[in-house]
Length: 294
Image (cartoon, rainbow, N blue to C red; front, side):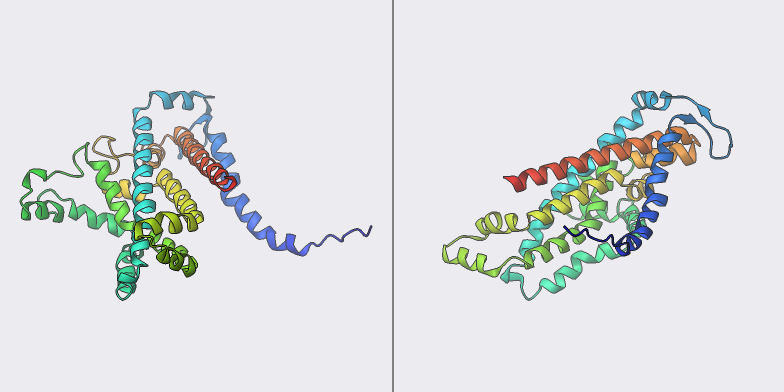
């Protein structure tokens, strides 16, 4: 039996990407885990070993429990809108009824994605302004003055206002991904369904959803992962306030490390974010593989 010669060329092509992953992902991750066992300041060269004290403090930190709950709210609403509603929207835009105006509508829905999230957050700060904001002015115009609210100043509405802004900004991107997936579905399937007399709703659930299952999985994974890592929207709009009613784990981590200068505890929060994100990603991958086996 002839032994195959080892080809070093593919390895050489892989080395730069492996080096980048080591330098910018895996080494910082290991170093962050190491730092979580210490109490130290970014301005000090000394570190005090505290063992698992930082992890114990997580249990007494109310901002952590609120942050996790807000991240979960973010994920649930994002999956419903950015995956569920975006898929329905993509299906409607690909319908023959909207064939003429579909290119224009795609641009309209995708346009917010092209705007910087920082700019969008500042824009929605004016929209939510309780005195002269567009939202309260619109509610007053249509006779719903009783629904006017201090949207970003009320602990009950602050996080939902942030989430709503995030959906407005992101839903166009996911819709475009679904449109691409739907366009790859063989037209013969829809033609056969028309012959059988299937309606649009039946075709959506019997043809479109099964055929774009891979896209649904990828978009769900991206959406949930993004919800666990979200930072810009709550930080710019509310800075986690009022109190910490709209805080998320990443904002709490930033404030702990760079405002309160408690880098050891901030490293611990970063580990928690990593674990939650990794576990959710693994669960989704497992569910996806189970669905394929079925």
